Amino acid sequence: MLYLIIGKRAHLTFVRLKDSGAPVEGRQCFVAEKLLIVEDEDTLCESLQRVFIREGYEVDIAGSAESAFELLDVKSYDLIITDIILPGISGIELLAKYKKQNPAQKVIVITAYASLMTAVEAIKAGACDFIIKPLMHDEMKRLVRIALDRPDG
Image (tube, rainbow, N blue to C red; front, side):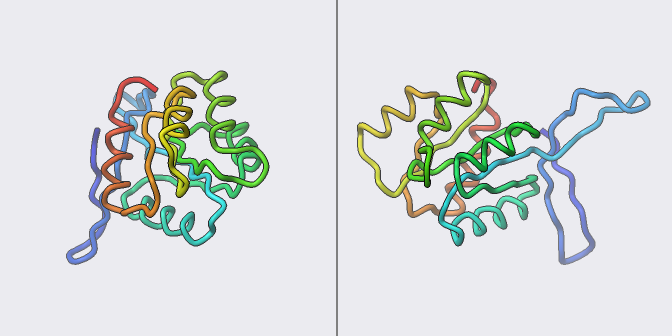
């Protein structure tokens, strides 16, 4: 992983980059890692988006699984973070359906309604982590880094 530092003096931004795999005139080309946050709670969704943009990620948000599928049809993501309780299709259904088509996709599941059964269901469906709300930003950043650094989905 490469970290690019952008800015002058007091204001520095650290951008987390990954190798795009496409050399440009004999040089490596790096792009920002992409996250999709699927959360129907607007305040939390926008808060997480701001946190991860400040960390240097490219972040898209969706308020439902249906909106997430629309984004996933046109763009790929390095990591999906989804709530379980969503309007319409649940986060577990989103996870299971998308992982069938893209088994290497990394997904973190978040919920305010945790139980052992939902945690097991999420992990069986392919989640790489299961996080209980309320979310602490530092812990979320740490878990996202761990998930992205894993070689498998």
